[in-house]
Amino acid sequence: MHGKLTLLNNFLNGVTRMKTLDLVTVGHFAIDHIQSPHDDRPKQALGGSVTYVSLAARKLGAHVGVVSKVGDDFPNAYDELLSKNGVDLSGVGKVKNATTTCFVLEYEDVNRRLFLRSRAPPILFEDIALMPKAKTVHVAPIVDEISSEVVEELRKKADIVSLDPQGFVRKFDANGRVSLKKWKDKHILEQVDIYKSSLHEIRKVTGLRSLKASMKEIQNFGVRVVIVTLGKRGAVLLFDETLARIPAYKPQKSVDPTGAGDVFAGAFLAEYIKKKEPMWCACAGSAMASFKMETVGPSFGGNEREVYSRANRLCEECTRIETHNGL
Image (cartoon, helix red, strand yellow):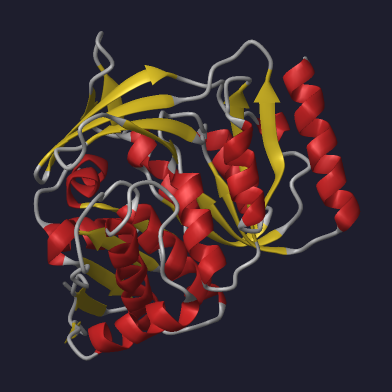
């Protein structure tokens, strides 16, 4: 009950301010324990898609907020980090006697093992009932914490709905180890304008092996823009009848890939809200992701000027494939 009252009061404060947000990201925050071959001991960092999407979009000038739930173990320092960077936390509920979603991330070169250690309460219909209308809502579950009914309600509150389905296609064994499963609720895609996932995830969503066929399958649900990130190989973008390959910008040093795909999404959405052309938005996403790769955790660099500089270089290398006869 205490958690619900906290969330209600936070939302009422947000409504009182009458701030119109460009982007609201919905999903769990996480506490990440990152084990890297570059470090002698694990590092704890604020995680979750909502973190990286929001911070990336803020760097490009978007007014952003988060709807999430955390436990009373959520460090005050994380609240301060987000608020200092201009992220509206009026939609975040701190639930008494609950734990925040927590992951252990074990990296070995390019390979990663992911383990779930705790899970916050799910995000329910009443948690978003007082959310002010936003230009864009990005649905970003990490442990299946958002239902299809919540997504349908979010559709009513935004002009654009974006989706990263990673939390919908994850499963957890007895030790918490994360692997991927098929997604049975594909009808959620009917509520979506922009889709972004990894190659492995889109294959689980569609049940298809071919990248092109999978992207076309997502588009057939009415999705305007389909993005598939490919790590060091960049990304592939499908919009209208255009398929484009977006190269990855090589970072000055590769330290931590955690959140790079989410940073891509945040930068993409920040530019898309400004009505920029999708290929440019994707280049901005790739450029911003390169800055994330250079830093452990969410305190990554890259101001607007620096991101645009890298994005302009990427635009010169993009490959556009016109597909007037279909894919």
